[in-house]
Structure formats: structure tokens, C-alpha cells
Image (cartoon, rainbow, N blue to C red; front, top):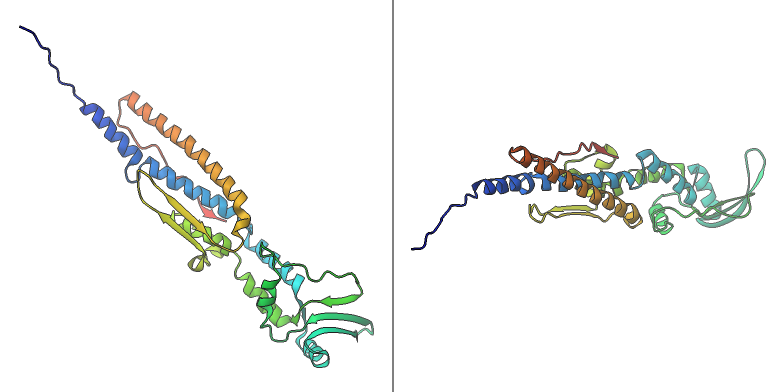
Length: 270
């Protein structure tokens, strides 16, 4: 009669380890989710920092320079007198200064309302949104101006444009705040109307984060956005290798597999 040897294989410990591994890596708030969201947040912080302008002061100074490339602010009464005498366009005349000096002026357009300034500004911007220098002319003895306005209207329009500084950063800021980041006030003020979107599918197996920026001029930022993505991609690889190494050490020590990832302090962006 044949003899049989039977045995029971106990996989309970293996199953327990697999469950521990799953909990540590792929559960809600596990290492995979932590690293994925943490690196997305770090990516956004870097991109916001690199997106022009570097600071609010830098952005406002650029606007000051741009406005003077297009507009010539003068005293309101003087502007009204010039319009009364020469009309609103193509002024080519001589005037005598208070010091008795004769001055040749060539003004293309005179505006005492300020209404058309925005349209003129938008027509004379490059694909980065910067103003063309329309005041370039060959004769240094001629007071040339493409668009003459009063100081009051010039200042009001310039301040309105300055209030837009930070919008391009704010379009990324929507995603950054959704991931727990914080923004400087000059960026955060634009968040409600920012041209950006954030989408997170919440899938622990195949997580996906979509960050969209539709702000004007964003096409100029592709080079450093791609660079930031490469940096974070490499960082994810390094962190996952360390995490797996930590799991191996837990197994070798005979202790429960623990989560290894920790949220990186990010702080305020720009």
C-alpha cells in the first residue's frame, strides 16, 4: 500500500507581510500617494519661483519702464492747450519754453481722456506682453511722443496695470494651494480669477495630477517648466528607492513594515 505524506503550508505570515506592504505603500495616505503629491507640490513651488516676475517690485518696475516706452505724461492744462491749438493728432510744431528755448515737438496722438490707452497699449506689445519702444527716433533735439496723456490719466492707468502683477504665477498657484502650499499675498490676491486648473483623480493605483496654466505669456515658460519636471522625476526615483530600502530593513529586523515617506516642508512660494 502506498504511503502519502501530507503537510499544510501556512501563508499567513506572507499574507500579513503583503498586507503591511500594501498599507505602507498604496493605502490612503501611503508612501506612494505622499511622494506623488509632495513632489508635485515641490515642482509647483519651483515653477512659481521661476515664473516672471521674480518679485512684485521687479514686475512693477518693468511696468514703469514699459509705460514710458509708449506714453508721454504732461500737465493736463498744457495738454488741453495743445489740443485746442493743434488738434488730437500728428502735431508738428515749435514751442517756446519758460526759459525762452525753442523746442520742436512731434506728437502723434494727444489724449485728454485716458480712454483709449488700454487699446493702444495692447496693440503695441510683443508675444511676451512687453511694450515696444515707440519713442526711438533719430533727432535728439526733437520732443517726439507717440501718445501724450495727462499725468493723472497716466498714473491711473499705470497703477491699474500694476495691480495685475502676479497673475501668471497665480495660475500655477491654484494647484499649489490645492496641494497644501501657501502663496505670497501679491500672488494670492489673484487666485479667484486665475487662469489655472487643478485636477486630482484620487486613484491610489494609478494616481494622476493635472496642473493647467492658461495665463498670457505662459508659452515663454516651457523651458524651465520642463526642467523642473525632470528634476522632480529624478527626485521621485531617489525617494522610492529609499522607501523600498526602508521596507527591506523592517523585514530584516522582523518588525512590521512601516511607512517611510515624510512630507517635505515647502513653505511659501515666491
